Image (tube, rainbow, N blue to C red):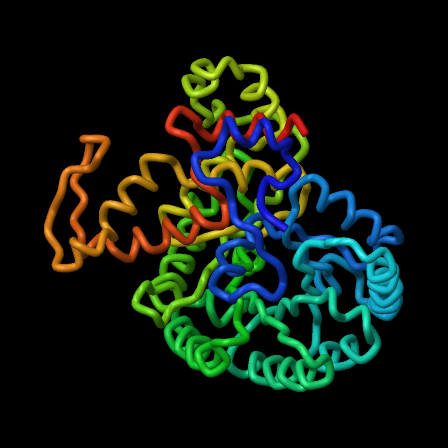
Length: 387
């Protein structure tokens, strides 16, 4: 699979200076962690889940989480597990390419049990999402994953969700982060990414952000995100990919504040109708939050609606300017450091301080591609929505 693989070849030629690379479930973990993109959640109870997965793959979805936890009622869990076994068998019989598939479990025992019950169709499973991850809760999950790998005879990844009250509360945050860091470091080769459970953070204080606000406008949440990135998202080789929080709005609601989406990029690209549609579906706030995710060190995003996928992916494409800067910084002859003017003559590129940024940018360029010099996110978004 590859990002934007659902777009016609002729359209892609006009959009990309460098097209996204191909990848699959057996690709190297660093590549896969960067390629997750918009990870779409779906309740495991859906009766036509296999059909949904195939349809969504055709619309550009490359990673999905099939949820047995918060998205379904406690009483539905046994039936949802049985449904997953049936739907995986259905997908396996079709012998077609599917997105990276993860199952969000409630308890460690579900990991080994589900791998056993899936049997041969488990080859379509990339791993498990582990809720409310702390050192105490996380170790049994990781031990179960290790056993499940032995049963499956193949690699399985973990994506811990950081959402526990201990992480949110100031008096326990430091120790909780230390415990999480020690646990995921011990299982580094199995941890694909860390996911943020911002809805649970808000719940602990009876909060819910409106569609006019991003997670970063809720200061208590923003402080937790900053601390998670501080400890677990470092660029010194000890860090992990940390994904952006869920955007929970998709229907139109009465707006309290003016739209956040500037009109100029859309007017320049003759796409005012697209801007109007995004505002009508409360996606202007999503676009702003995606931008803030990247500025705060996050990559990819948890999504609960298919309409969120295209904006996440369009804003993940590396601009030609970013690509040019990153390449200049990483040229072998500049290993000794120094400062240089960018090829776009609008900024300073300082080789040593900007090296980690450049390396991350080129990895993102590999999986999401590089836009042509005159192509912006509006063009990419319009192309995604046109398919």
